[in-house]
Image (cartoon, rainbow, N blue to C red; front, side):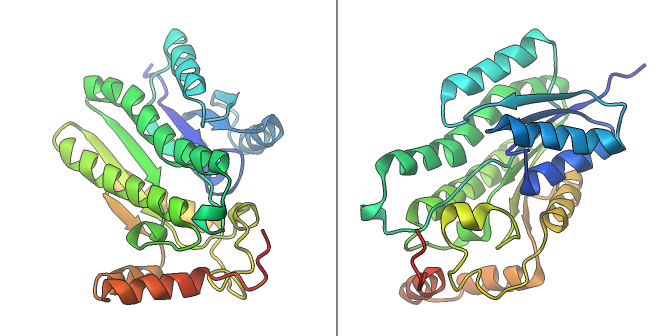
Length: 266
């Protein structure tokens, strides 16, 4: 009997990450769910098990800003002889505020989760995929990756890194049987806005946002097809294309206008 494949999803307790976990579980993958907060992870596991009872689901309540947690996760899976066939780097967060006013520990934590964890997890699990000659990696970037983000400078920069990194290694991996996809959603109806303090910004206010399920389904299809970059939504595609045509100084001011938060809720 062919052993089941395994998918590892970070930020899997809610939002897009949980929807990815549900999609992969429905396709028969055993799951490794990683997030910060056991209650959310247990709820995600229970929800998935209600519809798919014949898969194994492991949960890890981990702070991915700490590299030692990433190393312990990898060591435990290796000790259990669990091979990761699909890696979904979804965990990430942002915050609204002028860079010079922001708390450095939060900014560093953002870089550690949004960038370092993505790179380190990929670095750890990719060699095993190469040895096997098969595998898929999906990194959740953002439409923020295509432009500067005044008042969310570090967040936008981290997503630009994720996009560039994903495209580069996708090219390196041509012919290996492994694909890398960067999913670039725009604003989505998740808890991100309240955590980041942007729910009153012009980017989010009075808009009907796509659900995490819609975004995850789009990204999942793109990953299965091996697409390098997947931008969700026709409007987001137009906006990303227009970014390439606008003068840089004009783009900077437009981005600041969009990010402006009149009520400064943070």
